[in-house]
Length: 454
Ligand SMILES: Cc1ncc(COP(=O)(O)O)c(C=O)c1O
Image (tube, rainbow, N blue to C red; front, side, top):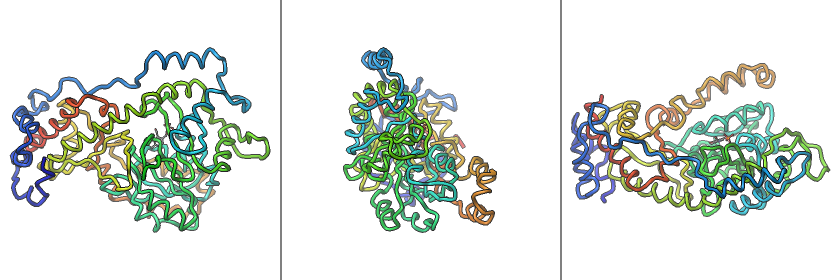
């Protein structure tokens, strides 16, 4: 296959309104799959034509078998339902050991969910009222909640438009005397640029908490995502590639720090009863870890399937101008594919707005979406709610909050949220090869007919 034969200039020169389809045809000449696609796809389903698929690609999730059920029941029957009173249960300990081994670290503290993993990590690192934590806005709201719940400010660094990760080149300029942590998010299971982030961390002596809540088995230079920073945080909520309904874990290499997290998880009680720590009850239950251990049996196999399908889709998209998978940094040795990210460039679709493209593709039986709605996280109302709260006003001066508001701009992230970014969810990557072909087919069909959809 030829790699994106048309650059943008050539594409626009060759393509007048209504000609996008012809341009696509010439781009993919020689590809029998695409020749077939182009023959089949005439009238878009949204205009009354036959859809590419009559049923959505739907791999039922979560996946389980009788062994999962039995492992859950065993946890039930043995009556060790909680780690109450700091009494360790075999079930939770086993999971922590297994997960630490899988991640290549000595320590793991399982928690009730990903949010509390982040919250406990930041707390253990001493983040508190008046501090600042550097973070990207292209993430799930929970990353930011964990910072705000500690009465610290999330200082947003713009997103790299190519990779959708925090733009590590912009981190240094946002560091101040108040910066207490850097919180990169391996969003969708891809890797943030950990070389640059760890260099900055070392230079300024600022700890790193990796939000790896979507990145189980993802890797940076052959090390697991989550194992490179001071702590790495995971979520096992039901939509996640490794799931148990609700659940979380903190991993790391620093025993003292992980012990603080462990203490914080259980009312602040130091497991060795030596020191006093702050804390809450953020404990996971043996039921959750039983499900996790059952699910871990198929994680690697599922992950390989996701990677193979993602590679196949990458290849198919090579031939569709203006519709690209997100780029990956060269240090990323494995993607966890919780999401498959794509960049939509409407100039190659006769200026068809992304919202109309989504509706048209949906009518073809293919679900693609913006990541988390269209309003960038750093502009959402919950930020102002916190800034206007009595607690924040007690902690931060009016001048500091106003400066924060003035500097809270992430223009590249705005474009990704509002116009460019699209995602496919992880379960679709567990489907058959033919289903993956349908995705490309639907995109080509809409591109070919884009002028009729304006
Ligand atoms: C990037 C990211 N961070 C944090 C979280 C929070 O995890 P949880 O929902 O388990 O609290 C999630 C998951 O939903 C997430 O995707």
